[in-house]
Amino acid sequence: MAVVGDVHRWWRAADATFLERTRPDLSLFVGDLGDEDVEMVRAIASLSVPKAVILGNHDAWQSFGRKVCTDKLRTSLELLGDDHLAFAVREVPRAGISVIGARPFSWGGQSLRSPELYDEIYGIRTMRQSAAAIVDAARSAQHRDLVILAHNGPLGLGAATHDLCGKDFGKPGGDWGDRDLALAIQRIEGMGLRVRAVVAGHMHHKLVHPRGGERTRFARREDTLFVNAARVPRVQRDEDGEELSYFVRMSWTRGECTGIEEVWVDVHGDVRSATTPSITAIEGLAPVVDETLELD
Ligand SMILES: [Fe+2]
Ligand SMILES: [Fe+2]
Image (tube, rainbow, N blue to C red; front, side, top):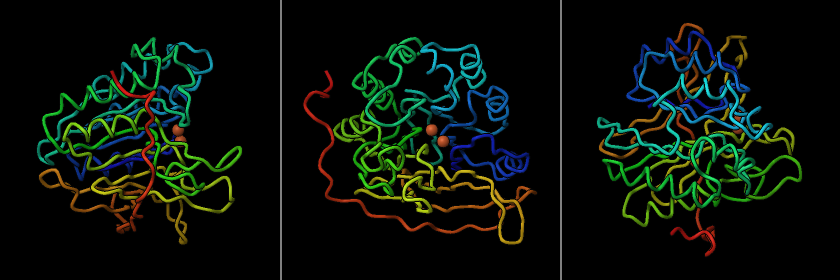
């Protein structure tokens, strides 16, 4: 599987070539393609490879401002169709996994920002209802080994600015993970399913505070791997001035992740470098879910 972090309009013809040539069984896009940018959505939607997308807060920017689904967001959702994996499941039989889509458009933090917008599109007004919708998607999965695709990671991965979803802006510090996703993961694991990986973005790799810092983007808690693919911008120049773009590549066999690499792709769509990231162990964090969030 290939993972594409927050795009923010950094998408090249060479990136399409890379995916079309290497043909991953599934390409996962964690969202923030642009600022409610229909042409960016069209470019991703028209890729002739199997893909699953979860749109980010930037993809619904004006809709959140107006608390109503704009024509542009409506068109984006139509273009993506079933490839937009919000509260839905995609089977990947060759990998032995089912991919579960979490809540789209997440801003992180405690608030949904616009319950009106979520209600209009998905019939959801609360974190609890959102968690239940994620769990419902997992219930219909054909495999016991799951990958969750989300725009933002779950609550519970740490409250330092450099943690995978740590708050690095405004008043820095605090856990900016998604509460609904944390609750859903607990429930899904309680059902005897295995969440093998959570693939997300949103919290960009360069920290606002402390300036110059970089966040942890690969972490493991027990059997679950957490990936934050938001290297922003995802296209950079190396020291020789060559333009390279960033992907994460994961290998899966019978429901187990057997390899993960950070990959830089050149302007021809060829891999220039592939390295195995170091993975931070997370342990000892208190359960994040309180009684008031118990599902019905
Ligand atoms: Fe982003
Ligand atoms: Fe985002």
